[in-house]
Amino acid sequence: MFTGLVEELGTIVKLTRRGLDAELEVSCTYRDYVLGESIAVNGICLSVTKWTSGSFTVDASAETLAKTSLSEVGVGGRVHLERALAYGSRVGGHLVTGHVDGVGQVVATQPLGDALKVVFEVPPSLAPFLAPKGSVTVDGTSLTVNGASGTRFDVVLVPITQGKTLLATRAPGAKVNLEVDVLAKYVARLLGRPGVDGVPAGEAGVTLELLQKHGFA
Image (cartoon, rainbow, N blue to C red):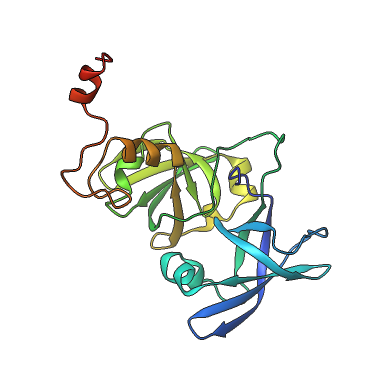
């Protein structure tokens, strides 16, 4: 579990293809890794397989490469890094699982004083989970949805976010990893929303009739 607050920017220093999978070595300033621990790389939860005093190595499966934008980040590419949340720590962003729901795309950027408005296009299946003032994770960064309409949403990057992440450098057309709020996904599942997590059309979850039957409405 993560918070979506990027701790530092790493650099991919080595990428080894192994069939459909890949092994990545990422430079960083961390020093006290535990083998097998989780780390979010551009919002993707990966496990440390080995480490040195200035880098760590992770494996990316074919599934990970196919469902995220990681395959487009080559040697020399910079990535957002966040180590797993320790229980008892402050949660400055929101609860993030590191399980990418889909890949979005930057549509436009617009300066707003010192801030920067960024508009994203998302897969239609993710659009229902985005609501104004709700939470979303973009490349591992916890952000507040400023506005949402159709398959697009926008965020406003304040100066500190611009300085600590790579999001302000993303030009229109750039792909980003998206994770919607996990609470929204559970609500959709309970409501039996068609097409969400394998719920077939016509299968009812929590309905008005069910609530009325049990005296809740």
